[in-house]
Image (cartoon, rainbow, N blue to C red; front, side):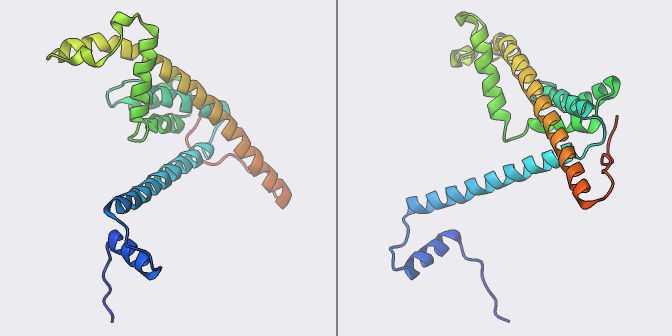
Length: 208
């Protein structure tokens, strides 16, 4: 048995260039190639995550309106600061108002390493736009050892901006979720009709 070794990416690039009669890539070029590979990996992970969320949503049992409302509730509590209990709150509130619990829990996962910086920055920007200049969050707010006082000053502005951001994306999640559910079920019914079988029922899952 021939024992093969795993070659490093930079050696692979150098050997590939040598086969083509080209000079080996420089250090900067190797870094660029590694950066492109890493970007492709992150994009692929994001695509798979989005596909997984979509499939788990559209396969939920129940009325599209209630499933979409559960999703919107989860998105709101996922973006709004809940200090780690957003999923629990989403499930409890969804149970209370009789919305879909699984989609509510699913919506809270909108806050993840991919989107955290975006929502944090957007909340600060929106909050700063809504308050007078003397109350806006800036780097100077936390300088000169005034961390705690800076936090107390910045928190209301951040929460104001975050409340609007959470509400906007919750409404957007409801609209997109409702449209996706209706379209998915319409296509399933059309495929079943073409196949000559009975119209498929809603897939099993959490309800109401």
